[in-house]
Length: 557
Image (tube, rainbow, N blue to C red):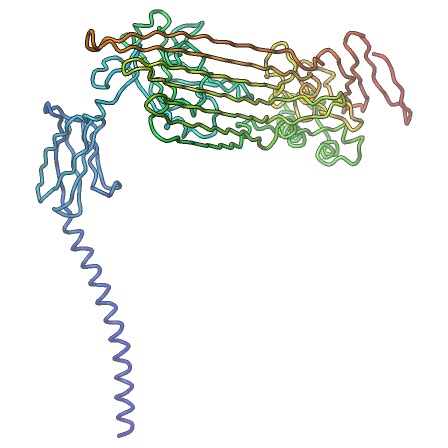
């Protein structure tokens, strides 16, 4: 009996384990059946999207409500096909300029959706030439954006740069990123002239530069693109018109906004170059492969023992004689910082409404600063502060007086350069070979490439010894506007008088002009080890140091 009971117990334990396994399999099978059942309940819906005139809406969006990943778009005839989870699904149908509509499937395999125009969007006010219109009545090619949209363009301090990619038909291109010179060229639709295709820019109805407005002070920007929209401006509007409206105060408590923006700037992609070590080895490989057809190439063959010294010099003399310079790393910083802080306050009463703003910009420079032992440091930099005040006075119920006051002070620091071009300062990153010379040799002398100085520049020398100039730009703009409502005479009649006065003062050539104080420079010939010196070009003197055994002597060339 004992053996029988133990045997029964063993069988019972085994059955329990098998029972657990069976339960797991049944659960898994149940889940699979549920999924198959859910899949089997999917439902295909076909439909058509039309407007109020029974015209198909091409490209209308049809998505499963609250699930943007399940959707489709209407084709050229307004038709669509969509697979939904069940017959009671809800679809959201939308189209630009139309009021979105939620449609219940309710088991229907064919649905016709009619969308209506969005009356709120059509009632939106658009700034046009000499006035405002509702979007429904605008017939010209006009596009508009708000200041809130432009403020989201991080990393830029120029209003022109903030417009990049924000408005259709508006093309911006920047040719330089130097501090204080970041305003891009703006073209509307296309370049219409070889000379000047810049659009007409109006700030609060007055022709002014776009740089006179900071991003935080913009209420809206309208761009007039075709002849019907720009006709009121005559020939000046031939290249398009940009209308900038600044913010104004609203009746109510004071609203204060403070924004701080810090941006890290890096050098854009530059051409990659081999260093001197790899360059010589590649040249040797080419000479070896072409030796059969060009035996004279062996004259340019560099021994491996010499190539090794470019990357691993044994002493200071070899370091000078076999340079291996990464010009990009030598000239540019890893990054630089740009700071933008803006503060504005708005509010008002029934008598006066106000908007006041201050905007400060400080931009750093990606070029490194080099000591020149001349008592100054050359380089690039830009600081600017803008102040704006817009006031609206309600003199009577029908009389309104407004003042717009703007002031700006900007100081740009740059090397003293009569040509005002920055190309020469970064040209070494493109032109100069890594083995041409040292930017600064071990004895502290600036390097130069004696065989061909003009084509192989030393940008570090140019940056350090070109002097330093400070250019200060001060702007003051004033608007005085008187508006009188004359509806008591004729409905819609209004009188408006505008008086504007601008002041623009530029102070340049203030600093240290060190262009013509040429430094003594050095070049070491890697083949012979001779030292060549370059003195003041006006003196006509050229010297070099040559070695005779262990002795060194200076000779005139």
